Image (cartoon, rainbow over the protein chains, first blue to last red):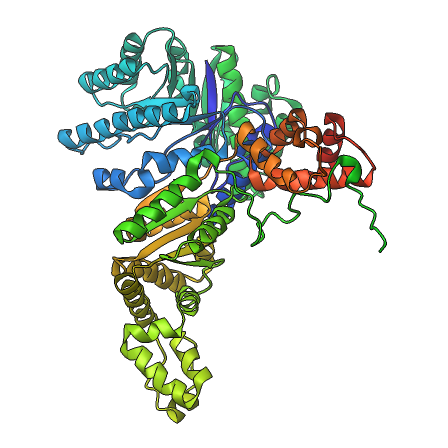
Length: 308
Length: 329
């Protein structure tokens, strides 16, 4: 199993690959509310995302480019910015290794059932239209990851079967982030269930895993996953470390950990960074601490997943 | 007469065929229809001229993908037909008056008179006193308070009036003469650099102009993907007026080969073959760097041909190309 670190263009996340070799990164275009994103995107579309980032590793480009927590979800889905072709071309102009097809996440619990079905049908329709579009252009869709959405067994099963019938081999499962802490078992059940329908040979990615405790279990079912937890932990001044005794990934406040706890696995450069944070925690700017911790966390997480 | 030394002769060329500046010149008529997008634009333009129903199209592509090239080619194409009036606006400027002025200039005062609008009548009155001033006023240029007082002009034209005049004029040209107006606006994204009030006003003017010009307009607006994404996000009402969005893509190897061949053909010393000058493996090397971006590929080929000529080479090989690329990418 490989872990992709979620990476935001605006505000720009740390360039992790300058410090260690991640398994890959998952990029979101971020919200357009940031004024300076246009100039950055202009450069990305001209240079290509690899050259712009100076990163040769694996890049997946997500399809969520607008905030999804708007009240009228269906109206939001109909917004011209959420049209699959618009998103597809933005992704394509950036030239990543893989792209995620335009889906409509079902993260809010207060959305009525009929609206959920409408959104789900739209997600599946987008997949169908994209496949037709690529077929017409003679482009292989191996580089596309199709997102499975659903909120219960029935909807998940319907979505998976539609994709299986289309002959899709690359899958991702979405709308998991909000379940990560509240309902761990539900996540596992869903993934297990999906794997059963799509078969062992199909590739399966999990979009947005917030709870790292799930990682050892997920390993059994998925090929790749992405997470923004390294930077999220860093925002709370928290650090990931690998517990020597239990061999587990743990998360604690930076002030609760000693240099000896991390010295044995952190590379010299990152260890020096850790020491620098510890020694100057009162003097360093919060944003600098956050970025440094995010890098250390991303490394620790990557190492942990590699060892699983 | 002394014959000038031609450094490109050893390569079999009369001169460097590739553009040194990645902006197509007016007379540049090399056109390779990448992925059939140009044919599509032409067909849509023809359909508009038959039905008369207006159409607005957005042409999206990164720098160097051929937007300007296509707009200029479409302009040349449209000018071949009597039933079309083609206007190319290289930059939308700071307000709607840029488009308005350029279009009116192209239409000409004689045609404007036949529209019979009150503003044209007012301009004619003014022109009878001061021809230059009257025409400038009609084109949206601002008269000073003193000038307005002197010539008894109530006010300068505002954007609303400009939209109405243009919409009415285009409709008139279509209904009376059966001609459609092909309006090609390049670099739409530059509007986004204006301050928020001007930007909103400009984009809203474009929307109103489309709404009011139901007949006789074929408008293509070219924009970069990031610019278009910003417009799509923040100005969906304008985007909803756009009948179709055409996304330009980078050229494939075979498409780029055709483009290169077309450029070389015009500067070949007779009996030479285009492929002898830029061989497939050479072009592949360049495309590896440019990912098929047409503008960037042509720019690099221009450098390669220059360097090869200045070094007195008679052929361009992969090793040489790698060296030149390493110094120029």
